[in-house]
Length: 173
Image (cartoon, rainbow, N blue to C red):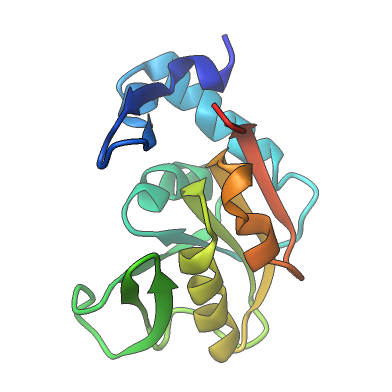
């Protein structure tokens, strides 16, 4: 089976006209979860890096087993107010308004090479904000990887200048 076969599509969630790509069906199936992590791992096999940065919350679900498999550090990026230590923050635009994400101020050391991971790339705004946090701490973003990509929403354009890769794409589906 392909990873796409494990992803459930829920029409009209959270709003009419939206086709929600649900990764819980990947996670609840041992073979699907292993396949997803293995496919994500293939996306970074030719890259030198030190740290995996996972974006709240589903980036944690795929980033931590990947970090474990590759013997890499894992750094969480969370919504504002969720991390217990000194943080840096980055605001980014949403369809209606804005949001803020944070990272611990000591999470990335100058010169560290980073792979950013999330379950899905749509417009790319959250990932770009995470990349900006990494760079503000002196790290370099080597690649951003995703289980799912929605190409028609333009995430790659938002992340122009960064290497971007995904396991499966849902274009116009």
